[in-house]
Length: 293
Image (cartoon, rainbow, N blue to C red):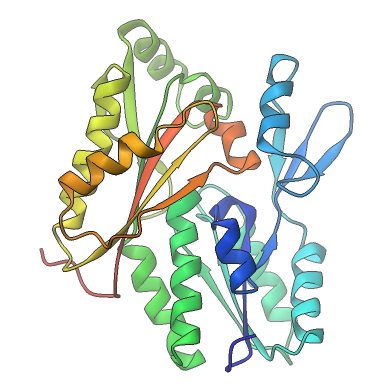
């Protein structure tokens, strides 16, 4: 427990590295994965990414956000464990209603001050904001300053990812049928990010998979130049273990990156919407500085 007794909670879609979660007592509230036979699982708790992928041949399940009761229980447990306040960091409100639900629950807990942060991001990019929350709290930043500083950190964080197939983005309603058909016929791989409202959009379109990965690195470099120092992260699925390859390219392309480039696998709930073959990179400034633009 940190000296300020401020708990940090996040949802499983933030892809916060497991080792960091355990080392800093981050409380993860899982999204749910639902199948047509009525079975429902907590993402990363009683179903793994590999198990979800194995069942893709039979069904692509749906996901649902944590219930208000699940979030409340996590907060009540943090309170019982001795925490006196909390910060909740969620994936983009443009892609999930988890943030709105967290705010609703927070307003109901009058005796337990809570700040909710909408990262307007997804996956490891959101997880980097979770880590920034822990860093600020453990360095002694007052609770009253956390919302503004974490909001700025979220605004300056970017994710760039590509999928080998557009099938899952289409089935999840993230791209339309015309984009799917055209991309499939011409081998177009869009490099996707989140806009200021937290919705997916195609930053660039690359012809072929290798060019898509190269474009991710290029975009990471272009965003990184606005800051003195940045932290980088790489995320992918088990089917595409390209960590070493991507790290080598990022180190060469982003000279102002801190040495510890993070690596994480995609959570089960996220890969349902992106598919089993995804690679992405994330960038967050080392401090909450304004972009030098």
